[in-house]
Amino acid sequence: MASPADDRWKDMVQAQPTVTQTDRESGAAARASSFAIELTDDGLLLKIRRDDGRMALVELTPDMALYLREYLTNGLASIGYIRPRS
Image (cartoon, rainbow, N blue to C red):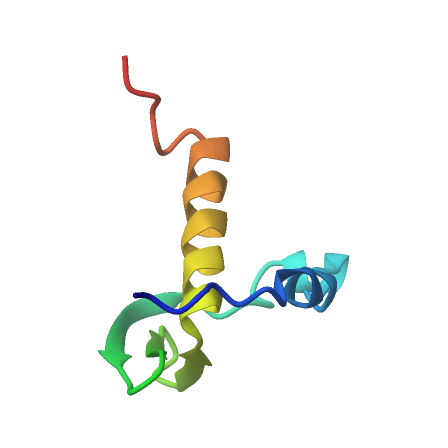
């Protein structure tokens, strides 16, 4: 039987960083040029290569990975990238 989902989702949501106007300014955020995902014993490692050549490594729990997937899917739908099925 599968382990129950992590019920600390409220803590994760409340701990989200605020995106400021400074963050949104042109050139403030590095663009991702590629990424890799590696499985670990209890989660995922997300390695992102930035367009300036630097790397960012983020360890994700399974629940955090699911939340990220949902946020990305909803964000893409919000900008019209994902079209509803007819």
